[in-house]
Length: 448
Image (cartoon, rainbow, N blue to C red; front, side, top):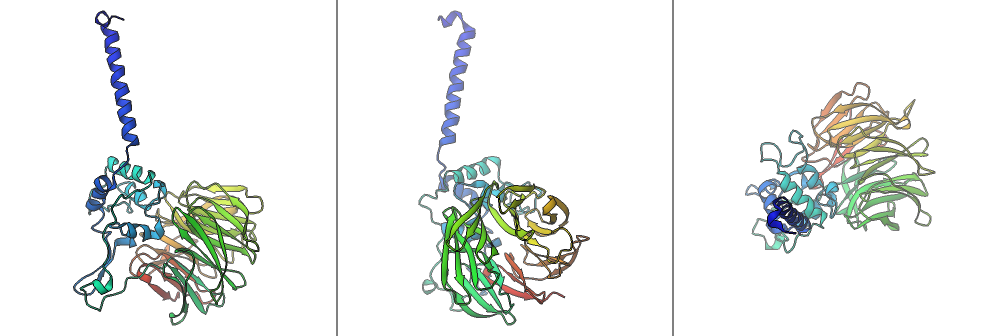
């Protein structure tokens, strides 16, 4: 073809070459590996490190701790913060870092917070997303390394920084409280909160504790983020390991007993498993959540199971068949916890706590949200008073809020602990509550 006498075709040919080059360039950019130290680290340094750096002791001997218990200035700090969920390898949508930096600008949970810095640009959030998708490779970077105590030039009066309390469980008689953290299990006498015993367990990160109906066994749910979920069954109070269940591909976030010989577990791998404890095998696997599962509870004489998690959905399952009965999606952010109303005289009612700053009330058997209360702080956990007259929520500001389920009004706000109150439970008989959270704090609160 004579391109000189065919200017239109010449222009078309040149345009095609440009398009091909552009596509190739775009494809090449898409496939390029993100360099953490050159591309991602500067974003974290400029927008995150001022609030999310390692704990340090000031001249006054006070401790400055990373905000929200999230440390971003070292690989070790990132992997140990927020149960290992800050960055979930290969899963940006499940990574708290990516969730927070992509919230809308008027959302209270956006990072960096309003007034402390500009929101990240789309280019920056996309870069972090791709880095996580590609495996969150830090290269040679390890970050800030805390000095050992014997190497430090600080005085010997150095306050201890403890891992957060991530789960609490009362013994059936109410005499003891079991607390779970990266330290292991700690057994406290309830009324004095005096530490009686510490038990080492297999899961490095503990996310949930549950006693068997006869109080002879304690199930410990946890594992290693993006690697393995573990449920360890211990005799109680001896603390001897009886059985270890391995079947999840990511951390186990929630465990609930169905009866003395079976329990269910929910994991960040999106699956729910019903286990036969006599031989440690799976009875049934429930699939349907598009992201990690955070909480489970039984209803209808334990013939139905309610689940929720990061995908914002509250789902109802037939335990015998594994069939999905209802899926309710009124929440607009991650749901952390579910609690069944005790002594219900009509349809079962469940309360849920979410990052959208609401506690919502549901009638799961008919697949309906009834009403909701909006809080001024994100609720992390919910329980009911033993008579079902109030919902209690522990929040990221460390405080506890009481909610009337009929009017959904907040009837009381009680001073709790410093920092995030990750865990909450109610005494089986006297309506006192235990809350736990940052720096190993546990507090006993009497509810009037």
